[in-house]
Length: 361
Image 1 (cartoon, one colour):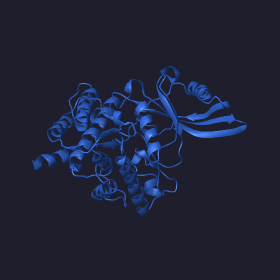
Image 2 (cartoon, helix red, strand yellow; image 1 turned 135 degrees about the vertical axis):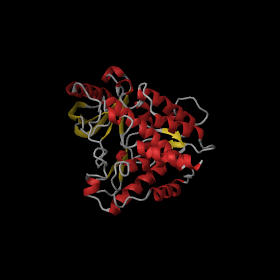
Image 3 (cartoon, rainbow, N blue to C red; image 1 turned 180 degrees about the vertical axis):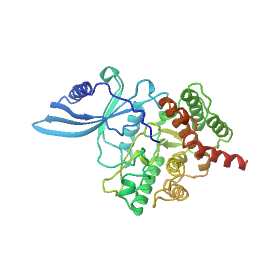
Image 4 (cartoon, one colour; image 1 turned 45 degrees about the vertical axis):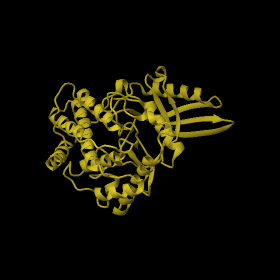
């Protein structure tokens, strides 16, 4: 696990600051003395896009204003993690959720799709105060969740996140104008489209290498697809590391990172949430944090809150294991860590789930 994240970089921070200043000035015709200051790229930046933090100041009608901002820049050529990247779609989803629900998402300032401005599309949102569980090192090994929270607080943070996830799944995505969120792969169902995408992802991500475990999982998933499934708006990358919690650990301040958003059976978000936590525990040979509900209790809580059935949870747990295994393999290949391209901490969990499912047939 002691490897550097392949974080995209900005080549010229000062040029970026000046460009953003000009862009904001053009977006705020009633303002003057517009300035972008204190621009930085956080060390905890994600692996699939560039995130920048900065302060925006301006004067309007004689009053001084200041706002802490976050900028997200689309990676060039899709970036390291994904073959394609649609920053505009992420913005559309967050905007629709913010307008149509009480799900906490950051206030949005603007989307720019003209690549002549910054070289890539970008959007800007307000910086929300809060704390986010760490991925590296995993939040159950060290950090504020280990050191500063009680078991009762951890349980509340976990279940509060699940409650908002259930709210997301109940939204009428068609009425919100989000029917275009679906994968563009061929298929009669949302699941078929997703499986086709991940089959293509394996070919793209492995760059000609074989991945026997992922191929085995995809074969099983394609052969055992559930039928007549519900379709809802799915977060996609539903995990603790994509939730910002209140500084006093009292609840959820924002649900973040919508780059894997899709349509499908919403139980896939629960399976991904639980599986990602499991990879940080049994996948690494360490115990889960005290106070976190069991995965069975988490599923039951979500079923009650959402009104959806978890009937196909086991199927989507394999689906989650396949996706995370491929993503990690892609990252290891990109970073040139040869010994971990296939044999990383997510692979044994996927193999174990496949063994159990195949034994039942």
